[in-house]
Length: 225
Image 1: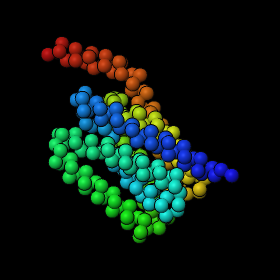
Image 2 (image 1 turned 135 degrees about the horizontal axis):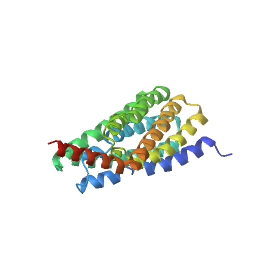
Image 3 (image 1 turned 30 degrees about the horizontal axis):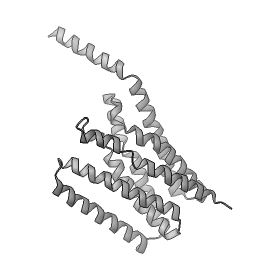
Image 4 (image 1 turned 90 degrees about the horizontal axis):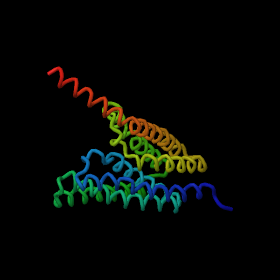
């Protein structure tokens, strides 16, 4: 009999792997100097790596091979994007990027080693839950900035839309195995992803109105001067 949890984890693994490539479009734009580096969701990426490393430790201990595959693939792809982010952040300096990357990999290996050999799956799952929650809340500062500046470009729409599906799938997985530390963060993930998507749609639709309003305000200022 097919385990429903395995079905959810398989679908979640595929969707999570696709989501791992979501930072690619903004990174390409920054490389081409079409946009500034702040459109790259660096906080989301870093906490996504931490979350997958800790969950990977949980899946090693509990023997969930399909879920473990998701963590391994996700960390590898996200590492590539974080290294690219380092390269851009350090003004395309190779030496600083190299040392920052080595430090990142060292920290990742250390967390995984400690988790597998000195942790228990219940404690690790709650640590992962905290990282998950921070990961989903981290774009919150940009949400406030998006509302203030009415700039939909600050929302990484590719990762946001995919994350609705990813969080929903892993939420189903958490319900199947009755793991509260998997249910809570993914429920938050669904909520924040829908909120981000709604804001992006709203400000994207109204982008021309905001542009016209800004132009009129500039004209009034010129007349007053």
